[in-house]
Length: 130
Image 1 (cartoon, helix red, strand yellow):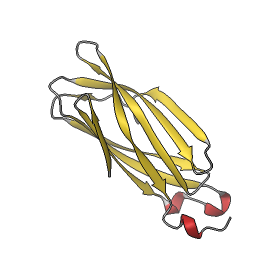
Image 2: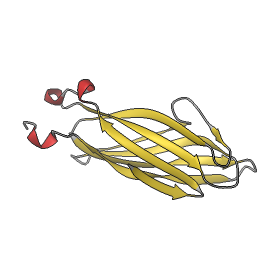
Image 3: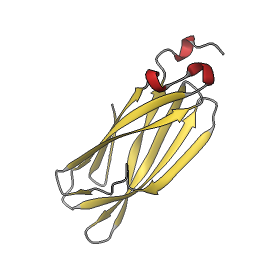
C-alpha cells in the first residue's frame, strides 16, 4: 500500500497486476488500483478532478486529466472516506503512476491533494521473453 497526506486528505493506493486481462506476448499489461480517500480534516471537501502521470519502463509518459473519478465527484465530510477501483494498461511489464486530485472546500477554496507515486510491477516481468 502506498499513501500520502496533504491538506488533511489521506490517499492510499494499492495496485494489483491483472494477469487474466494482460497479454504479455502482445506487450499489453494491465493493472487495477484501489484508492481510499479519507478526509482527516475539519472541512467538507468535494473531489472535482484528477490528474495522473503514468510512465512505463521504456520511459513513455501518458497523462490523464478529467472531472471526478469513476464518473463521480464525491463529497467528503470530516472523517468520511471514498473508495474506488480503476485501472490502466501499459506496453511494458513495469511502470509508475502518481498524480493529484483537485478538491474544493465548502468555501470554494481549491486544494491540490497528492496521490502517492506507486509502482506497477508485473510479478513475472523479469521472466518474460524480449
